[in-house]
Length: 340
Image (cartoon, rainbow, N blue to C red; front, side, top):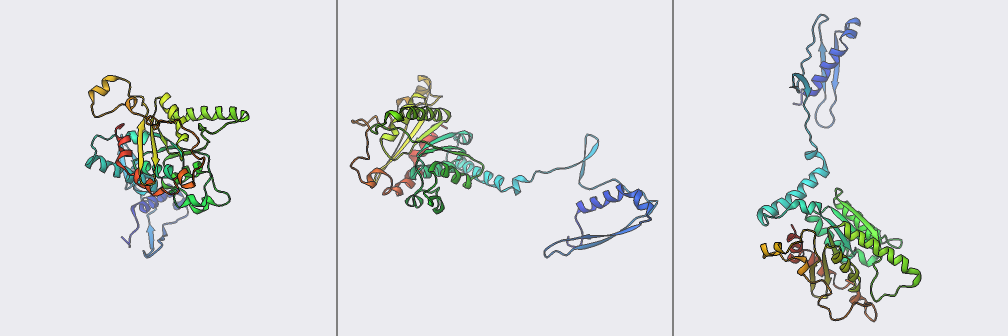
């Protein structure tokens, strides 16, 4: 009520009178004036309190509960209603719960939350796939890329802005991770600047040790993650990660774009696909060991695809609109849902 202070103020004044009772008696202070200041349109309240010198001030207070025989304050955690991060986390989880309730009752949402995704390529494909995974509740991302952001990237790659391309451009992998954290500060996202060795691209003797170190680091990254997304520009850039994911028994999803089409391929073997009996018990589940990789249908070995090719044939500059289709396609979601 506008004309009365709240109960916490009443308890506070009673506590002051009780604690300072002796001082008040000695000073012959029998009344006091208190101002309850309120900002805004609510008027402030002036209170006059008086007490008798021989009076006994009660220790009873409002808002305390008796716990195990003694009075103690009652606490209520309001972070779920007031903390913006908590509100966002709850709202995003509510969306997924509605999907599970109405569409996929068997989906395991906790698996998405715990999933560790390695995204090779932080360009048009990498940015849009990461945004799609974020909507599915994935909270652990690692981007791998060695390029810098250019002005042509900003309009096509959803995690970058104009300022990211200024002064030579920021690193794509690091900036993509920062962009995801701006959308959802509760996730874990990091960027790794790494150039993936590719067949058909020559390596000098001085670079051999460096390339060996890169291969070991890439192998360690694949080993530490549950799913690897091959979202690189060129065909040959996918070759080494494909071998490593198969060797490490990790699930891999390769996405490639054409001018008017796209392909999403799931391959690799996950840790829980170990027995032949599992494939026989569930006819709807195809084990990763029975799926072909990105290169299984090729009749030629991977080589340098950037030779004698125009810019639109080398990257996603002219096909970026297709990337929005494949990230929301049922094919990509099915690749993850089959492992839920």
